[in-house]
Length: 221
Image (cartoon, rainbow, N blue to C red):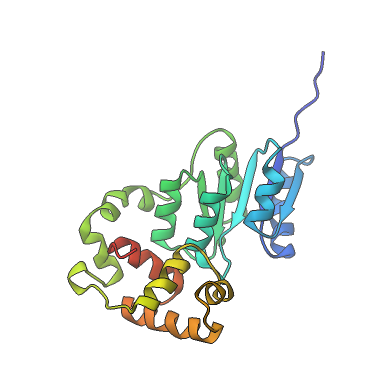
């Protein structure tokens, strides 16, 4: 009779070694024999996961070059699926809502206590999901036209963007970093930054992630 216990296998996607090490320390408290795969990017993580059965996929959304929405777009098109847990220092309601709608298993703020984080992992491993009640109860709000007021922009106040700003905004929504946007539009990186500043001002956004969220909710993307 084979009594061998299956080891937990986890993929951690984070651009910083120290963050991956911290996550591994938490997971080892759950399973001392836990096997880890590590990647800096979504693309590298998807390549590692292609031929393996994984129990958990843990992804840090905080990549300033493309923003949280850009990271979600990459996850959505990467082929990664099942038991995905997202971490972020930013508790952006729109980002959490999109993640929930994508079928992500859990969203945890990085300020969450270790004990709660372990409980969330256990919930996901058991086939459950974890999102704050505010995210789940807020879904009808985000699906209504009035949801745009949350971002201080309404459809009646639709922002005026130039054609080039729309081009930049579209590429921001695809998660492209400034250098790639510059290359695809054949403009200087500095010019991309100027266009992004104009987009943020027109959309009354404080960062590129919020700008994309606002654009989606007022149907200009």
